[in-house]
Amino acid sequence: MSVIYVLLTISIIVAIIFFTAFIISVRSGQYDDSYTPSVRMLFEDELVKPSSSLDNDSTTEKFENKSIQLNKSQKL
Image (cartoon, helix red, strand yellow):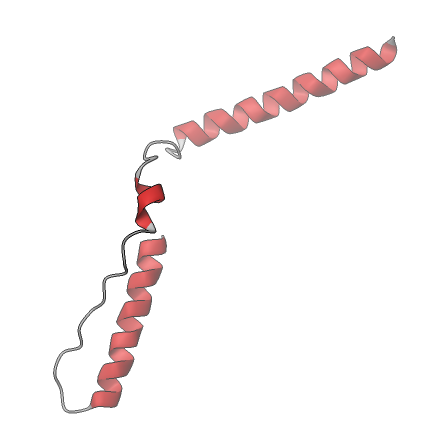
């Protein structure tokens, strides 16, 4: 009979932990925008066109750095 009390106590503690985690996630805004994350993968990454200059190697590196920065900022 004492096992039932232990199991009830453990289940109530687990329920309180999950309820607290749910309240924290709702307050942090995790469920505010439920549409955009599901559609975001359908859009292509926006590419930045390199500006015309005489040095093509440095322009290519700048272009790659900007595209990497854009990809990182979109993921955040």
